[in-house]
Length: 331
Image 1: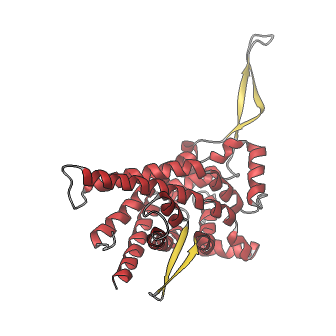
Image 2 (image 1 turned 45 degrees about the vertical axis):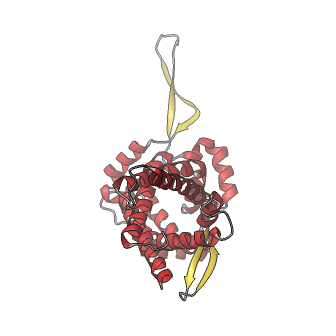
């Protein structure tokens, strides 16, 4: 019975934390997606050549050099042409996907960690990485069925596909914007069921980011707990400073993981664009590298870090707080 309650607790805590994080950071996700897309307008870089016959300078375009608009330029363009509500495009499907996926993930992570602790050194780096890459779903409250994170990504990809399409839609003020159901219907009509699974391979590659993040976070969390208990003024109950420490640990872990694994995000967005030339993971990576240079793999990284660092800090600390307040007997 206690195990059942603990599973429900982690499901509830994960769902709440994911919902809070998604709402707060939605505008940053829209900006990130716009910056990642190939439809982003590029402006030419002009060079000034001095020393002409009449002594004046000649302004000429640089040799094929283009530079993407910055974060503030994209933000200003959205606010002026589309209105503030466009910064929350895709929030509906995002909430539909985030709440259950976070709920399942945290419950799965907890159960996976318990299982791997029996095979490896308890709470070691191998345990944390293995748990982050594996999902464990409770079936009929009696049987644990291990399934990989690949299954979670496969099930949720249609939701993320619709969200990305909605975020990439550019319509000026006054134009009727497509809702989630209309977007899903259009994808099915034009691309069939396969259209909902565009970018899935890139999502699989993104599992590495989660594994790196949890490895760093759990290591820092372990160090914080050791420091708390070895302190002469240590208390048995967690205080505000403990949760602040967990927020900082989560922020640092996500920042490192995002920088390492970010290119898959750009590839995934390109694969989900409507009517694009991007078809497969490695083909997309090659096209981006050849046509735009390797720097293009990090377009949108700044809003991603601004979004993901506080989002992960909010999600993980909210999760830890709910688990603490509701009392997990296995903690």
